[in-house]
Image (tube, rainbow, N blue to C red):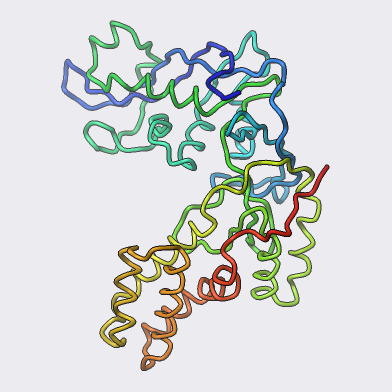
Length: 360
């Protein structure tokens, strides 16, 4: 059964709508309520694909930790080809804001924060329609919502007052319909399996690894051994504590489809980012290194392995070139990525065939 095959619960959501007021021609952002349909797993029939304990850090949107790290026990559900996790794993703040009520009879989306966070992590343009902080989608101006009009209803009167993107409501409805499932215990959102991450001297399960350049310490769930190696390299004698931390995190992992997603994805972005920073070094390098640089920047190389190998060769060329302040600084910034590629990713870019999930 796919998400679109589930029955639905009809409710409403309040979202920001970017408009032009017809009377004044001024760009505004107003609060609008309109109906949506949330897929419903009333009988809790969806299978549990994975169970985790102590997932942390919950999200890059988590701020102001209370009493240390915020841990969260989470069951991931399977619905067709989708994995779904409780929206609580997106952020500590949602545990208090109660984005949804827990009784079907009075279900209500009382805020949009969980939807915005998911849209940002999933790079979904329709979900980003729910963001209150984005630039105005018509004028491009930074528009601070004032709320002076209260919450409006998307009806004929609204259409008479404002010009706006008429696909606005349909796109948000599609986003909600395809990415969320409601159960008695709360709302679940479409998410991939977590990744291991070395962060602040500890190894933890990260539900949504950061998608930023230079991010080299996230690994697929089947590559915990590689995180251990990275911890040993960077932490030295302190590595034992980091390695012991995740021993009981994976309680159960069903026979989910093979670990989809490009394991070298973040690393490839880091390669491109660091090479772009090395442009001022090109005049002092050999022609072969410059050619490697251009091919890697253009991402014209055939595979991730070739891209990674070009970066390592370029790093070696910078190291062999006459010493300079700029070159030494670049080598220092790129040292972690170069080590990972040489010691972990290049020898084996695929999961270890001997790895087996831990059963409950």
